[in-house]
Image 1 (cartoon, rainbow, N blue to C red):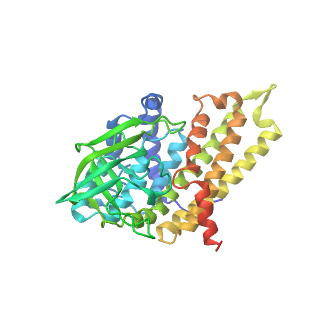
Image 2: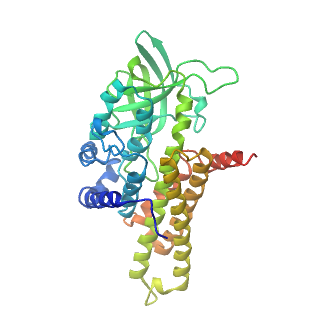
Image 3: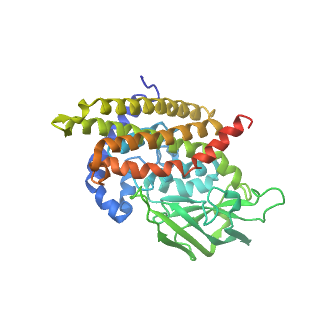
Length: 383
């Protein structure tokens, strides 16, 4: 089907991204996987090319673009090249909306120029040991002491946490209220150089090997009150508001990965010979890839529609939950079938399909598990 979500500007951006990935990423990617993240300087190279500040207002050195269309192009091309770009997507797609929506003019002036250039990489710290998706159960605390907050607690599974210069920390600034566990949460922007802030273990994952994921610890960290993001006690509402874009970003990642898997596998089966014939000549190969292509097309239509509705401010929590549920489950099915067609080679990490397989699994977990999405959809049905 003909896609209408992209225009000439997006296609020109696509060519820039392709050239960058071919020259700057693919040749070094194996080294990044061993290191566990790209070199810190790489993010500055992304910033210089405009890849980090696409949605940052022009007055702060960004591209001033709204929505996620350019981000979708970046996702499509990284998937096609079989790579990921460290924690850059969390930086640009998940953290930035909080700064754009809730930062004061003074905070934007302090943080956004470095955000766009790659001089200030960011992370957001919500998850704690034992809380998972239960954000209302957060126990990291911050008490007010004059013109600072004193922060204590720990976070885990923090993407980009090992290299971040600024961390948006969700913490409890007031006790829970009877009947309202969500009250009393705030967001403090913590500088990584702050005394008492430390990075714990860099967590080993089965996939996304170039995306550093870490434990973070806060021991009497004194955070200037000027680093409070938005209003005190209102963080749960902020988190819920931004979940729509977070989940849509995951949808984009899932669909683009599934589409890349099909492209890779079509090329592979044409070249691979089995019993003296191309693997592509077998009916089972054709049928499996036909099923995959149809599923990807359905996911792509759903993704494109969601992107358009998000830009109009019309994408609801229930609709993005439907999209995340369908697209991430579809991604798992499609990539599994594509790996099967690779045979034993599909299990070897030198083949991109193996990395896609490992990377895809987390899409059904983070941003709210598939079960959470089902609950949201069920509630929207009045159940």
